[in-house]
Length: 80
Image (cartoon, rainbow, N blue to C red):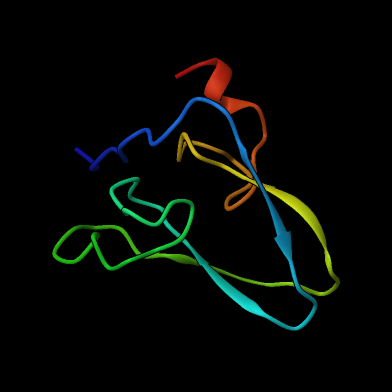
């Protein structure tokens, strides 16, 4: 049976990303620096999802960790 991620929150987090910058999104839900990875997944089946911003904009990172559009919110928090 696959490991389930920890739900960090049941709503997305809006983040201003900068063009050209790389972001490591927490996939396990255990990071203390949500929505970003702090290495808390160590020893688990999870790895951060890398997002390189193509432009400076506001994006909505998934916080329930169940999105089908990782690292972004797709509304899955409504079902978990």
